[in-house]
Image (cartoon, rainbow, N blue to C red; front, side, top):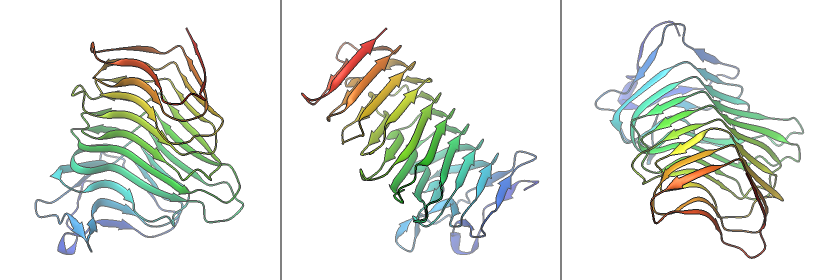
Length: 275
C-alpha cells in the first residue's frame, strides 16, 4: 500500500483480506478511513474496518480512522486463521466495540503457530482496546502469542483482554505496553483461563479503575514484574481471584484513597511479593 486508502466498499461492508500470505504495509502512512455511512452490522454481526480471514497475514503501518463508528477496527472474527501479525498501526476513534479483535486458531496441526500484536498506537477509543480470544490454540504444541510495546489511550472498557478456555499451551508474552486512560473507568490488563504460565512485565498502566485482573483459572504461575501502576481508581492495582502461584516483583502502585494495592480472592494462592 503506497498511498491513502478510502474504505468505501459496496453497501458499507468492510475491507476483507482473504488471500493467504499477504503483507499489507505502508510506505507513506496510508490511511483506512471509515465512510460516514458505514454500516455497523454485517449480516447481524458487528462489522470491522479491516477484516482478516486468511492465513499468514501481516498488517503493518496503517492508520485506521474510525470516525466514532460503532465497529471493530482490525478484526479476525473466525477461528480459522493462522500466523497473524498486527504491528505498527495507528488506530483512532472507534466506539463501542474493539480496536483490535482477533479470534485465533492453530489449525490442529503439530506446527507452532503465532500471533503478534505489537507496537500499535490506539487513541480516542470509547471501546475496548486489544481483545484476543485464544480458545482454539489447542493442538498440543506450544504456540506463541506476543502483545508487546503497544500504546493505548482513553479506553472505556478493557484495554487488553486475553481469554482462553483453560486447555491451551500458549507461550504468552505481555510486555512493555503503555496504558493511559485517565478516566478511572477501564480495566488495564485482563488475563483469564490459561493452562500455561503467564508473564506480564514492563510498561505502565495509568488511570484505570483496575490495573491487572485475573479472575478465572491460570496455569501454575503468574508473574507480574517491573510494571508501574499509577492513579488507580476505586478497585485494585492487582486482583487475582483463583488458585495459582503468584510472583509480584518490582511493581509500583498508587491510586485513590479507596483503591487496594493487591487483592487475593482465594485462600490457595501462593504469593511472593518483593521490592
